[in-house]
Length: 82
Image (cartoon, rainbow, N blue to C red; front, top):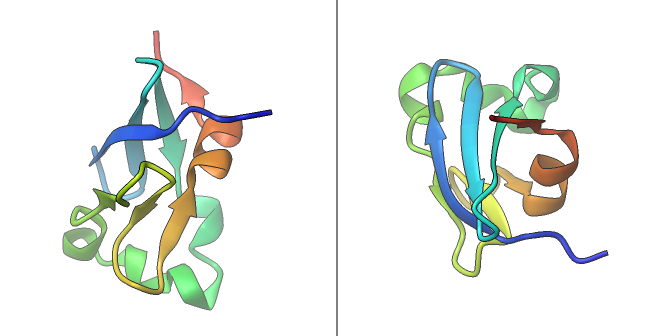
């Protein structure tokens, strides 16, 4: 199954992203479950977390070359916003 690509992403608090996909659906994604992994620990810094951006092509949201979350994860585990 092909997943929609990411159109935009916004950090709305210290651990939540609002992600809009290219099918115009928005989902809320809580990164808290990822924070226990060493790779994601920098996301505990609110300033760093808010620097999220969409990777070219819409395949992931990224913070730097080492930290990203795929469109698959965001689409399948995000909560639909009405």
